[in-house]
Length: 203
Image 1: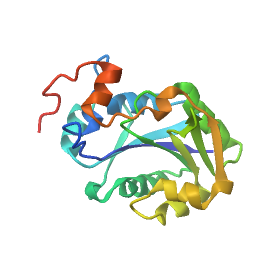
Image 2: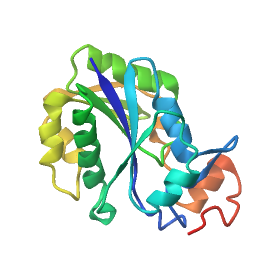
Image 3: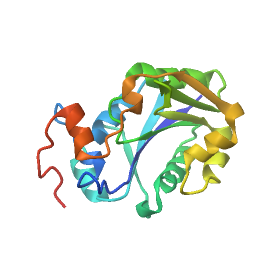
């Protein structure tokens, strides 16, 4: 099975002051670099990053590991589903049988969680999602058979609509706390990583 990981990193990050892809993740890495690194597990053939707002800055300052390819979503304000579809198109062009979809604002996922999702896909799951504390997390694994449901989802619900429409496809796997720990606001950031030094994003 050829699996391509897709990092969803096209948002403007308005609540936090700039693209979350460029947020410092510690150790000199950005959120985007850390997520891309953590998704590059055995069994992942390629890692793509879908960018939009601040695409040039993300390309120049994102610190991406070698081999990570950028895909530009030309309409990032239309919502995350547009980035999902852009990622599916790029993954299909690279011969993917399945994708891992992971938003860049969840940079703390453990390698074991990614491996559990990959294992479920290899066992034949159409959709595999990690869970922790009764909550679904990331990354979500989607076999090619489930891609049409993603493409047909309402823009305001995105992947959640595909999960709701096809519960028989869904396999939950054990996740870690990081798979549900999203960073949306300065308070979220500071609770996990300490003070957010400003300015961190130069337009």
